[in-house]
Amino acid sequence: MALSRGLRCCQRVFSWIPVLIIASVVLWSYYAYVFELCLFTLTNTFEKGVYLLVFHVCFAMFSWTYWKSIFTPAASPCKKFQLSYSDKQRYEMEERPDAQKQVLVEIAKKLPIFTRAQSGAIRFCDRCQVLKPDRCHHCSVCETCVLKMDHHCPWVNNCVGFSNYKFFLLFLSYAMVYCVFIAATVFQYFLKFWVGELPNRPAKFHVLFLMFVALMFFVSLMFLFGYHCWLVAKNRSTLEAFSAPAFVTGPDRNGFNVGIRKNLQQVFGEDRRLWFIPVFTSQGNGHYFPLKNRNSESQNPLLANEDMWEESDDGSEEGSLVDHQDLSVTIEMEE
Image (tube, rainbow, N blue to C red; front, side, top):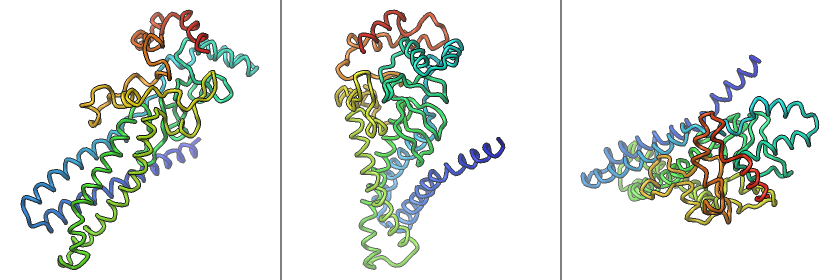
């Protein structure tokens, strides 16, 4: 036990190394741009002021989104998806796998679960003892089930999922803007240092490397950001892009695709003024999502009763999602 705890502690410490690398590069870029370029190299006061103003806006937005991506906790399934004491006893008392699956099926009828395992069974996490909501997966690094899990990112040392996916996308976009701005404003001085128009000073080393580092990061970020833009347009996570979510009718990569506009609104919200600000505006609570060809509340009774279901999270059994009998009929019709 002591050895295991020690290894876990070491793993947690080492998991911060990629974040420290990114933070070190960003802090160096701040020093190189603000001091070596703007304060020690530029002579035009107006140019210097404009560069410093725009740079600090880009730096602030980049740092804000990176912070939110790192320190926003990954959302986990609520208590409604955990096995109750009686259900857990029923599940453990059954020795036959088929009987255990039937217990999970009966419990799932009370919940808005439409996806299945590839075998067709209800998705259940033995470690967390929860029925997995749609698009939820267990992260072996975070050791918990994560709502709408996209992937575990070592560069933010966090799971990217429902609670911080918007922040992660904004982090990528503002990182690209940060790199583009540095490269565009440094380019002319990069050439001057390169051909010898400016004298050899410590600023030369910083300006030359600023150019190379900014371009290198921009290229890598461009491909990653483009890939995630495609995922958002299709309403898929990285995991779903590799393995299509399975429904009662079988696997369907477009099972959650409800159109580009609504796909964007699920991640960024309906208020476009907040799309580019790192505040949480994603729709829903991460436990259920509109399905393809079921875009309206009238077509999906689970969405029509969203408020009723959220109110039931306070522990009262009276306000369950909808009447259990009616919900069972709804799910049977869905099947």
